[in-house]
Length: 234
Image 1 (cartoon, rainbow, N blue to C red):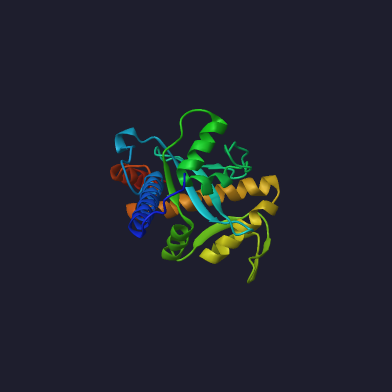
Image 2 (image 1 turned 120 degrees about the vertical axis):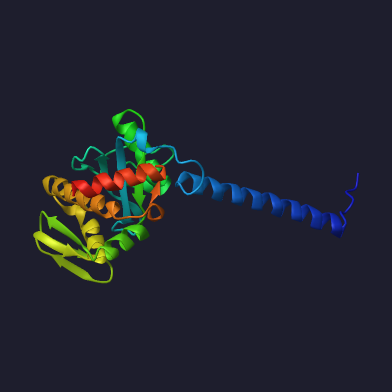
């Protein structure tokens, strides 16, 4: 049987249906992404439930990929934050990546928390995350950060060569970015010392952040309680 050509009106109607379906799919994906990063939907952890929180700070690595450069566990009791090595081996289902740092591009702070839970066992911790832009803004707002470097670092970021001596340093946001790029070349001991320093610095920066500056699954009262505890501990 010969196929009857469709009318222009029918063709336009079919095209409009396809466009409508695509638009709905895009909106649904965007809404899911917003919910996942804590910008939409219910924030689940209240101040009464608050115990430990995963702190994450993202920044580009030496290849330009934005990954979790700082990972730490903050205890609201006032103890110093526990640094977690971003190079920790984890399973990232459906990917060929295998470090905790690499969990960030696949799920933000929530993805890092879930990957850490798979590696250590237990439930994922609630998180407070500084995106790369938020981290830069926080460092600039603070007028830079004080950091004890465990070794001299010479890092070329593609535009400028940074030579950072060992010892106490006052770093700009860009110099901190150079530290992140050079960190993989430190010894195991030096990297552990640097991770502890970065955990301390990140906790101090988050202590001065507003609720709208971060990505988190904490409710606002819980975030206020966390920043108060972080401020007292620094």
